[in-house]
Amino acid sequence: MAVGWGNVNAIDKVFSILETFLGDTGEFKLSDIAKRTGLNISTTHVIVSALVDKGYLVQKERRGKYLLGLKFLQFADAVSRNRSIQSVALPVMKKLLADVDENVVLMVRDGPDAVVAVGVEADHLLTVSGKWQSRVPFHAAAGGKMLAAHLPPGQWETMRSSTKLERLTENTIVDWNVLEEHLEKARHDGVALDDEEAGMGIRGVAAPVMDRTGAVVASLDVVGVKMRMTDERMHDIKLAVKTGALEISHSLGFNDSSGPKGPESS
Image (cartoon, rainbow, N blue to C red; front, side, top):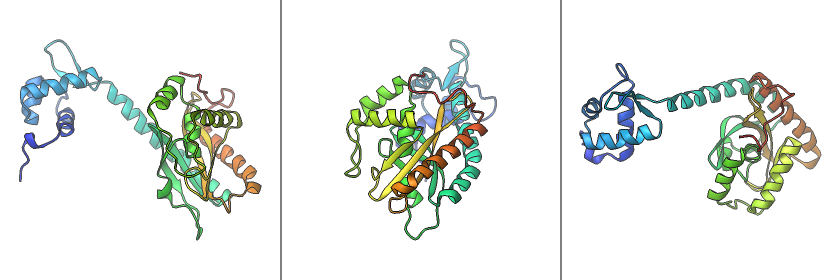
């Protein structure tokens, strides 16, 4: 059964307008957009105007045709960057897995969360499922802390003012001042730690992955059960993670002499 436009939500309407630009010349008058989407001219004008304001559409001249804006190039660049990082990182991650015999994941930031972009799992009877760590509040995961430690000041202040530090375990840091001390230590040491902060019995160690400009674009993490990631092993694991992260960074064009961009960078 066909669904009338009156029954679809606003998001569907926005995407229907954007998808119009994927065909033909990619340039359309307001009336053309309304005709192709089935929306009335008033609704089309409201949505198109909002998309122009946000940079997703541009109008060549007053009362002229609309076309996709440069904002979409940023998305294309982000997709390309993430894919290239994953392809470069995976061989290094497999080598790290063989060295430490624990799960290895590459994490990126998505708002206040750290999200697994790709992972390889150790073959243990008692292990951490990759799905467990697919999305974790940044303050509870080693990788999330490392990513947050290198946020520019403006982004950090925005996240601090809009994010509640949720307690996941009795070890989760929920005090912003204490968290900032941990982030400062992570910047200094080059590794961030998670000691049963995202899950009881689970430890994590993360190091920064940098692009050619020195910007931290991901974190390389080893995640495993505490009974195997003992205090005695942590020194070697930290060193292995830092070495792996640096190898990935070099493949992305990073030069050691520049060092990672700290939070003072804009």
